[in-house]
Structure formats: structure tokens, C-alpha cells
Amino acid sequence: MTVVRAEQGRTVPWRNGLGTTRELARVPDSDDWHWRLSIATSTGPAEFSSFPGVDRELLLLEGEALELRFADGRTVGLGVGERVRFAGEDAVVGVPVGGVTHQVNLMWRRELFSEVALDVVEAGAAFEVTMRPGV
Image (tube, rainbow, N blue to C red; front, side, top):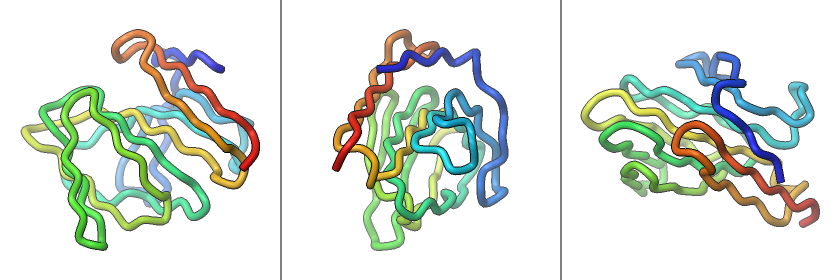
């Protein structure tokens, strides 16, 4: 279990160059990370970066709502505190509803972990990440 505080983040560009995220943790701290936690800001519709071999959990932290539109036709709407898991290789467009949104994004390499949990310790300020190795 790791507790991550939001203020310890650094701003980095999205892999696809369409935005930025505040990276809170990357373990190990290299481009070949095993898991990563960040807070992204969405100001308008944007494609999510592709991360083959990675699973994601997205939690809407602030904003009215966020709509995720998947290439396979699925649409998932998130309100504050709601979350969704999906594969990093899924083609997804995020559409903020009613203005800017901020979302917590936990990503992990699926071949490395059998169980993953993201809990909010302090609303918008601290998060608990539990990663269990193995498949």
C-alpha cells in the first residue's frame, strides 16, 4: 500500500500530446513504469493516449461530469466520485460536460499485478494505492 499526496505531483504531457497531467507517482520512476497515478485536466473533447498492455482506472475528481466514448460504441458517463476501468489500448474520447473536469487516473501493467485498488484518503488531496503482484 502506498499513500500518494496530490501536491507531490509534476506536470507532464500526455503520450499523444493532446494535453497534460499532473503525475503523482510512477513506480519505478522510469519510462518503463509498473504503475502510475496522475490527475488529468480535461478542458474539451480529447482522445485518450493508447497504452497497450496497461489497464486503467479513472475516477472523476472535480467537474460536472465526464463522458467516455469508446470506439466499440460504448458510452460511460461519470459523475464526481464515480469510476470506470478499461484497457489502455481501448480507443476512447473523453468529453467533459459543463466545463473543465479533473480525473484521477491509475494505470498498471496487467501482467504484473493480480489485484489493484485505488482509494481516496482525503478528497482530492491524498490517495491510497494497493498493488498485489502476480497474475
